[in-house]
Image 1 (cartoon, rainbow, N blue to C red):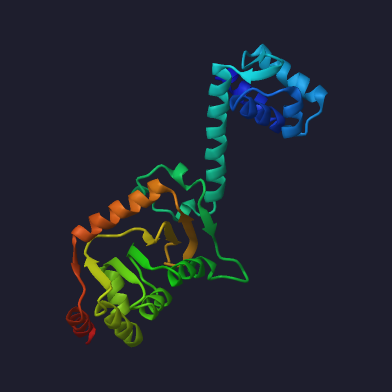
Image 2 (image 1 turned 180 degrees about the horizontal axis):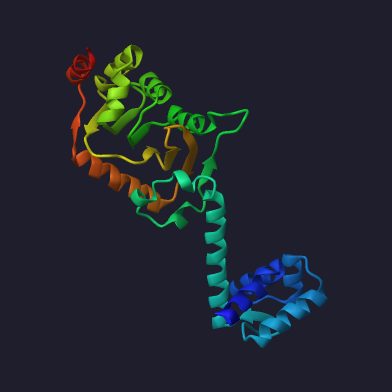
Length: 269
């Protein structure tokens, strides 16, 4: 273990070592080419290449250097470690709010995700990010334990121009129908030909919206306050979202105008 950690430290302490090894893993390079790629001096490159040769990570061939099989293995493994650590660093501030038990995909697929969090000047930045995506989309699919008034307003405004389908928890529908304005807006949506809202009694622990090729997770804290919007176009996340949507949809029923009236009746004293 200690020897392995020492080798990791050997690479980690020098960005130039990492760059040189990754470059050579991609194909042979001369020292001049390595100097141009890294900006390192010839003396520094000489030390790096000598250390790599001592470890049998690189070999000289035809006036150039190339990674050996083990050198390519180390380069690939270290790049994976760097990617994992970069993803962890990006998710560190929001991971406490992520329902990871419901997110049955490898978190490494969020490596290229765009994470928008509230700021003092833009406290609604995460929601505004999602709304911006929804406003210009031709199709939106969602499953969620909540549908806020601004999202519902965008859906209502785009009726006739946008296809919208969603599976909501019964609690989410109760919240919408409890407000007169939102109830009428919801009625407009459910009666539109291009909209399909369904209700499930299952728990939906994470709010997910698929806007064409972008999957957005709205991350909320225990009080229901949005803490981040996590956007990704990763195919594996898109496949997960579509699969989850179909699972919730299979256990749902269509929401109709008559249902909204029935919800309203149940809420009256």
